[in-house]
Length: 186
Image (cartoon, rainbow, N blue to C red; front, top):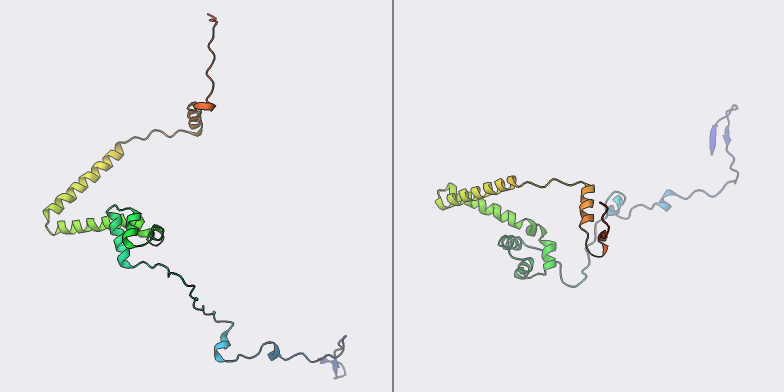
């Protein structure tokens, strides 16, 4: 290796304490050039997932839109999960796994749909639909009024709750009855 110029204009060579050694291996030995153009972006491209091999056995269940509609309708009519699963032809656990939203919200969704149809029918001039909507409104208003009238007992604090719990203990751990006094000190 050479270093900068010296005063005499000559070039000074560096001295390696180990002496001259073999030349360093070429860069290509450690990092060979890509074999084809597809491998040229190995470091930047994400590896493509390989197709999963078939493990055999029964394929996993995939619910259809029609099955989801059936689950919502049956839940709206009050059918049990076992009955719904049997109607579709699946296990109740599979029903709970794949139709969780329909089971939780099915009744509310279908109720919303029925009320929407009822309002559309009432707007079209159906008198019985109008009467039904008025009745539903009155019932809902009465239920709200009853809820508003109900008074909740005041919430007890920790000490009051513990005192009541201690006083209501019966059985083996109940406090003993006080002894009867024979002498009257009056």
